[in-house]
Amino acid sequence: MAPGILLLAPLSLLPFVFIVVMSLSQVHLLGGVRFDFAGLTNWARVFTDPDVGMAWVRSFGYFVLTVGLEMVLGLVFALCLWRLLRGRTTVLSLMLLPMFVAPVFVGLLGRFLTDSTFGLYAWVLRHLGVQTDVLGSQGSAFVAVVLMDVWEWTPLITMIALAGLSSVPDSVREAASLDGAGGWQMLRYVVLPSISNVLLVALLIRSMDAIRYFDIIWVTTNGGPADATKIVPVRLYEVAFRFFDLGYAATIGLLMLAVSILIARAFVRLLDQKGMAR
Image (cartoon, rainbow, N blue to C red; front, side, top):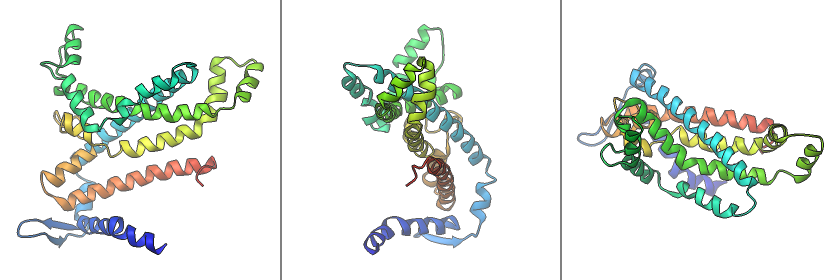
């Protein structure tokens, strides 16, 4: 394992140790980088900072809405494609296109489409009697960035779920049909249990990405209006590169890492119970 460890150390382990040291220091940039040991000051601050606390609340809401909608829509689309006998490959290829677009471009596209002056969606809303600046109102801005994320990453869940559905044995479905199972019963008691492991893996993949998502929100709203879309990654960027409080930013980053590890461990435990962790 020595070659792997020697390669991993400078690329991952040493930067991680550096960030830990930063989180225990006040970092000064004027006149050269200087660390002044501050003990647990940054850690005490991160648990008492109301701005960070509200950012975590928004992150939780963003996480639940994006991942929840993507899982539901992805499964629905996968079931529709599974039933499609002709043209499945073509339809799937078209559905996967948003996934291959860089998140920055998705944000730019969403910003132009929702622009109150010339945006298509803004025009449609005006003709429906909804007079609102989509990205200028707190509630609608949060909904907009959620929907942009859902548009981009629902195809990933669709592809994974479709792969799971394709592996459901025909003999099992035929046996359930002979026993009198209807469409809903077939879905609930045969199909969903058969692909539950695949859906759990898809949920893990999207959860790890959603907890640290940044691109779309920064391009469209910069965390506004009135901090309505300022989730934890946006707050981290702001602290580090707008206020240059690098020690505090390192603390927020390590806290995000800890939360990600806890979520991953919960999924690994579920996978282990299902015999898929090895």
